[in-house]
Amino acid sequence: MGEKLDIDFIISTGDNFYEGGLNGVDDPAFNESFTRVYTAPSLQKQWYSVLGNHDYRGDVEAQLSPVLREMDSKWLCLRSFIVNTEIAEFFFIDTTPFVNKYFLEPEDHVYDWSGILPRKSYLSNLLKDLELALKESSAKWKIVVGHHTIKSAGQHGNTAELNLQILPILQANNVDLYINGHDHCLEHISSSESPLQFLTSGGGSKAWRGDVSWWDSKEMKFYYDGQGFMSVQITQTEVDVVFYDVSGEVKHKWSRTEQISSAVL
Image (cartoon, rainbow, N blue to C red; front, side):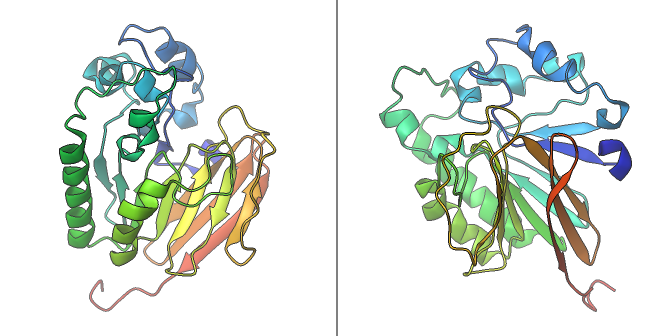
């Protein structure tokens, strides 16, 4: 599909290295789970990756290190960052530090919070930066990418902290799409409160879990419990989203068309 669509770049929605992230820049998992997997010529484009909760169980700084980019130039992972394509602007956010249970009930997991503490200041700055960047954006389409769900019918369900702190900012700033991973499925939920669409592309591994909490049929546009991926094609006037299974068969399509304003002309 990368070749057929002549893609410009690729997004990874987190949990990049299962199940415990990387243990350092020399961890063979980087080669085994990334470089040696995505070998097709069509996939030798820039990859933009966010961190997931499983990545925080390893050495976070390793994934952020320029050493990995020297080993494989298509790799790029940062905590929070912006990719401006002029037509669309992508706002990548670090969602794991928002989730209380990783701090209060880590169970037997050890999380790497270096660079996060004090947590309150980190989250406050992230929220301020996101709100300001969205307000200042002149892009036709605004797309936010994070690991954790905002709305989901999958195993993890909604992430309460993101609904409380992130969602109001997205709605107030006319964000078109929120794209996430975390739940191991493919999913499209619309919103009765705004034009915002919630797209889960977490079908990279450990799918077919079978635990779906069925949603309001007016909002639940698509749910697929298996592995797969999605594509987004964007022009000045249209966004086209397609979900595929592992063999490239189309499972769901959605599109939105908007007129070019006179200010753009």
